[in-house]
Image 1 (cartoon, rainbow, N blue to C red):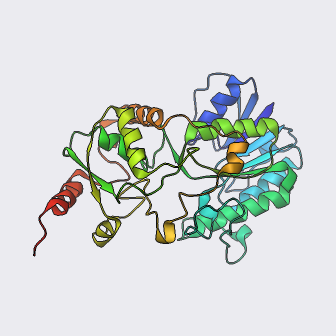
Image 2 (cartoon, helix red, strand yellow):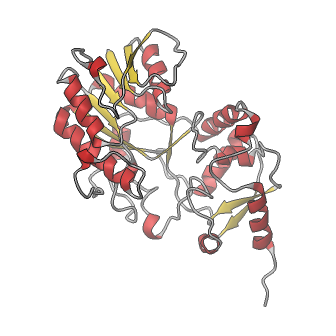
Length: 345
């Protein structure tokens, strides 16, 4: 297969390239050329700038499939379609579960209501405004189907993407914390809720490899890309991470309301976790039956945790000392002291 990957040097792109090469495909990547990679085989690298509308390197070329990784802005989809001019048989757009308008209702499938963008989405040039990311991703999905044709398009909506190489630390915090990778935390670990809240996530390698297989089969449709293939609680999640990093943590569970009162934010201060009730009750309870039927598979959580910790420990010391998500050792210590303090009667 002649495979074009738009991006290719971010989080999931390198995994896609290596997997595609291992399956004998001819791979072309298109990006700004600012993050060169050492590939384990021959990869054609085309340079351009989608923000500037420079996609000339794509014109007059033909590919069997195109995987679009980095797009958030709908005009990027429009410009890619115009540059490719029908010379691609299948287009796969990597979207996000953040496109959904309703995160409170458990069990929704891909037909759930989507966010809408006020104004002309093709005029949008900034996805950093509050709520803009999901709205513009939803608009980009619509643009993809309009430009390439629904029968030629796969829309993949990942949940939280995790694993080695994740620069957000939204998952990395837990392997690092449970293994005490920074040797600054105390022996007790603050854990959110009561352990029963649901968790959904996807290893970047599982996502990358599956998207290549979808492109091979020219599979069209919309898919919620998260797992595992059976319910996972926060308690089981932390147990799986602990197994992977060889830890036996002393967990101190803090009720969601107690954390909220102390402005301990879910997703950022307590990464991965979302309360399993109220407005976030459905986020980690999406229906993934269509995705499973389309062949997504999941490596064991302990493997993801072990590999992520190994990647983290190979980073420079300064980077390890400044996790981008989770609690600092000092703040966690203060919260743990307050949590264990006797109640004043």
